[in-house]
Image (cartoon, rainbow, N blue to C red; front, side, top):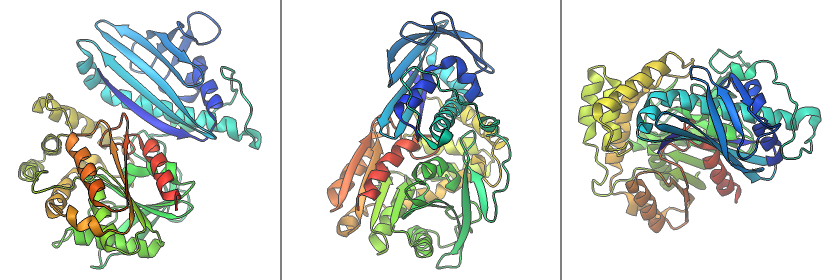
Length: 469
């Protein structure tokens, strides 16, 4: 089975979200991923219902509802040739908020090929549908300043506010001094402010800031930048002032410099801690290595969380890929460079032939480059920075015993679908750190915290941890 999954937190109770979701004939009003949706029989959606759907760039298809469990879950399927496609819509009740998780799965002899060919479009449509559902349900809550009581299955008659959900690929208005909107391609854009601090060696470090509350600094992983964590920041912004620094070489931040290493990264975080007064850190992947080292060496840090830091033990995580990576970058082949890293770190299936992987990556990079908006950078331009994180992994090798004296509280987060070696790193850290918690999130992989992953679910764990003073 091959497929995709996404989630978002909606500021509306589950009965309202369900009412919007199952009124399927009105989906084209709140998501541009649907051109038309028609029930073929009966006045309302239910188990056994058949629905005719037309989506942009896809042939019309008939879907049959297999599971209908109000107000939490429904799924439907459609078959084309030897491939069956299953859509699942799951809602989790969190009182005044709801976690919505959508997934699309392909089964059959040609399922893998369909997933590869339609992967970019499928991810885009999932993002649009989650965003549209959130906007529609939250409008229902905010209308007249009250939360209407809606029975499951009833219609919520809320008109979209203008054409907001159609504007994700267009320029947004300037929002005032040092203010922008930001997000990755085809994800909702949020208002934020910008700032710059000077690190100990004089290097400028740019950052984004949004929200209100205790300060929380989010440290990006790999070649990713602040722009890739806007959905995570948005999910935390009602409880925290979230700071998203652009690490060296990204955004308006200065270059890595000749003396680049973990000490420089920690000096950058120290400068932002001083500027912001924050005490909380969250680091994703190699950003988790920086967060751990900062928590060990910087007294300002009282609590920190990490998501799958690649902490090597006696060379257990190799950096040998850097040589091939550098050669491919020098040849102007960023897709091949990225493939070399992904394969070496077991972040893609070993069953994928290298030419196929490189081809799919190149296709995505080319498409994304023409859709990303300033001030965000294209993924292609950021890929060369991945080598720096390989150097961090090598520098931090076998440093786990040094963390036994850490006084900060630590949350160790990981995903059920991530490579085994990353789960083993978390287990080892849990046995070393004196004040740690270990949480594994089901149905999540290594990219969970980024905007292309499942940031709302990661935000839920972070909220609980950092709010528990």
